[in-house]
Each structure stands twice: as structure tokens, then as C-alpha cells.
Amino acid sequence: MEDQSAPLDPQIELAPTSWPKVIGILSIVWGGLGLTCLACGIGGILIGPAMMPPEMRDGPLPPSMRIAPWQAGMFAFGFILAILLIVAGVQTMRRNMAGRSLHMLWAAVSILLTLTNIYFGWRQVIEVEQWMRDNPTSPFAKGPQLSRGSSMALVFALNGIGLIWPTFLLIWFGLLKRTKASFGASPNADFI
Image (cartoon, rainbow, N blue to C red; front, side, top):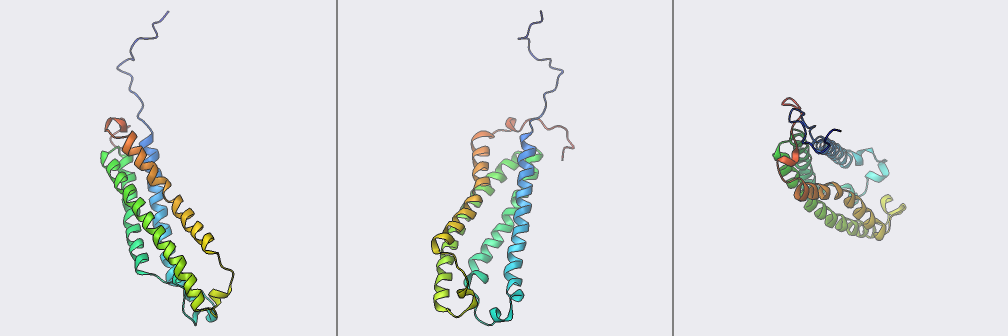
């Protein structure tokens, strides 16, 4: 009977771990989705008023339909963060430790930016309510509206979803995958 406790044959090469490829691809996809959503958000705010019926364009627009300075800043940071996440994903797929550092940086800044966005979203809900009281004849104020509670729940839900990936990355790279050895051996030099 063969001894089952014998060490592995040193000639057999262990398969590389697959998690860097998975995390890298997911980060690239999320970064690309972020760029796409940014383009749609900016486009919607810029061209949206021109697509409205004339009776809606005559009066003042609600605060949610104009670009506020804080939104311009969020768009700029969002663009930079989306590019950073794509670069982090590529570096992680290459099994480069820079991918870990870039993911950690992206996750920390992304969480801070999301919390900032929650604050400004809350302020915008209040501004829109005040705008509707000040402009009761506007077509925007006459239609069905969400209550403050529903609007805030929507702000928290959408931003809460945005916290899932950065929180995962902070745990993954901050607690679990901290060393070069944890990245595993690269399948070959021309991997990516």
C-alpha cells in the first residue's frame, strides 16, 4: 500500500490562486460602470431640461435638476475614483501588490465620498421641499411627490448599496490578503 502522507512531488507545480483575477475583473467592471453612470448622470442634468415640455422650462428648475457646486465636485471625484478602481483591478489581475494598495486607497476614499454624498443628498431633499413650498404653481410641485421619509430612505438605500464593494475590499485586503504570498504565483509572465 502506498504511503499517503508522503510529501508532494516537487516537480508538480501548484495551480495559481484564482481570486486576483476575480477581484480584478469585478473592480474593472465596477469602475467601468461608474464611468458609465457618471456620463449618464452628467448628461441627464445637462440635457434633461432641454427635453422637457415648454411649460416646464419657463419657470425655475428645482434644485435636484441643476448642478450644484457639491455635485460638480462629486462628479470630479467619482471620475478619478472610477479610473483608480480600474487601475487597481488591472494591477490585482497582474498580481502586483500595488493593486492591494490602490484598492485600499479607493475603498477608504469611496466610503468617505459616499458618506459625504448621503449628507448632501439629505440637504438636497430639504432644499427641494422648500423650493416646492416657494413655487407651488410650478408643474414640478404639482405632481406626485415622495415624502421626506421616502426620499431619505431612497438616498440611504442607494448610497448603502455603494458601500458594499468598498467595505468588502477593506476587509479582503486589510485583513485577509496582506502579503505578496497571498496573491499566489502568476500563471505566466504574459498573463495580462
